[in-house]
Amino acid sequence: MLRRLTSRVDEEPAQQVPVEAQQGHPTGQLPSEPLPLCLQAVVLTSLTTLGGVFPLAYGLAGEAGWIQPMVFALGWGLLFATLLTLFLLPCLLLIIEDGRRIGSWLWGIVHRRGEPASAG
Image 1 (cartoon, rainbow, N blue to C red):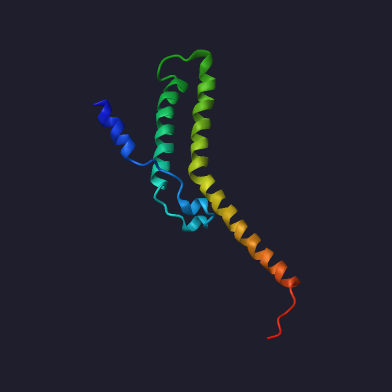
Image 2 (image 1 turned 30 degrees about the horizontal axis):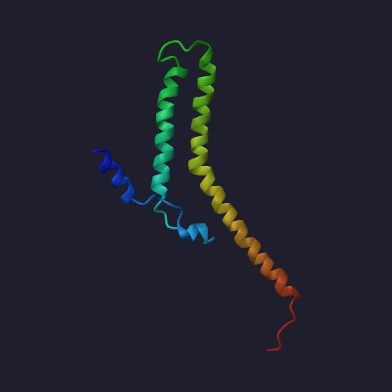
């Protein structure tokens, strides 16, 4: 049984960053195949942790005593961080990519200004 599981793991290649992302292609043109895997990992990790933390924070699992404020802050902090990871981070990556495009466009304009005009 163990041999069958290990051989199965060895046969399937691990998910890697697409070559297009490593070469610096625009973010909007990258394939979205790894997106469901990342989304699934973030959501499942957050839900299982929150499922264990919130009952303790709100006293549903008995009296938490002096640890209750810490668990309360941990739960809400994790929820806030999950929302930032799922929504704000992709938006910031697209904004950075747009900034790079604008910067390269401006760089081209500045350098063309210094070149002599071609006699056409």
